[in-house]
Length: 408
Image: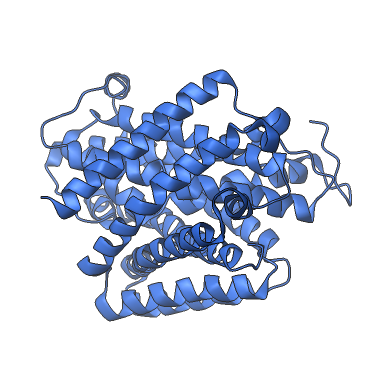
């Protein structure tokens, strides 16, 4: 691959370094909310909406690759580019917006960790919530936090992927039904869940964070040759995991008519069918999804707010680490106090997301089309068209969400 790095690590170690930013993005995006949504889709509509997962992941891959190219084209962070183009107040508002969104959704990640471990061990979920967040905050203040984060995310992705693949083979899904699910249809009553899936799987905030991770990896390994396509394996893994959860739910839950309210419903159904081993295996996957998002989601909020406030958005910055810890603390407090995210907090997160996400998408699209900034990494004509369609999709989702929140 022509990769040269200080210390001459082995080929496999170099490969992991190159793929690290994409894997971090995949791990932070694939959280308990994604598992719940894909489980609901499979349980309620069988294989019919598998195409929606594939489509959402396709656009996620396009914007994540775009984000990687922005990082490779310039040494300036994304919000630094925003400051130059639209002014500091816009960058600060954007940083605050992302911080509020991640803090609002963090309770769900804490709850996911607590429930998955409580179901598996019988120990109260609140104990696990405290331990998980304390552990996450402790990791922040280790020297070389990015390298630790990269290794943890890779480990959690391996755990998740392994547990879901075994569950997939236990479920014995129909190959013909999987193929049929790739044909676009919209079953009656499914629109709300499909919108939720696109908003979750096509995570523009997650795609944006890729640029910060690529630049972080470049600071640590300046001799490492990185390419925009290096992000794609991580996003492919994200798509595979989301697809497997939907397929397993379609195979196991749909025929029984089980109504999914949270991701643990899958494990409860697996137990009588395939034994406690299968149920615990799925719970391990849920833990991996929850803990990776607990750390990753908090890192996004803290990094972007830190960057907006002038701390360069680098994980080596003590202020950025304090802000990341603050996101975790807020999430833990809400999870312990309310056992889940209160409706008011969810509405706040959705409201801020409606404002933040379209602007991030427009800004990413505008910057990546600017040859003065991008040079040889500027969007190709095909990418302009495809990303433009993705941007229109983001704007359509924002309009639908405004209608649902304020005019229903």
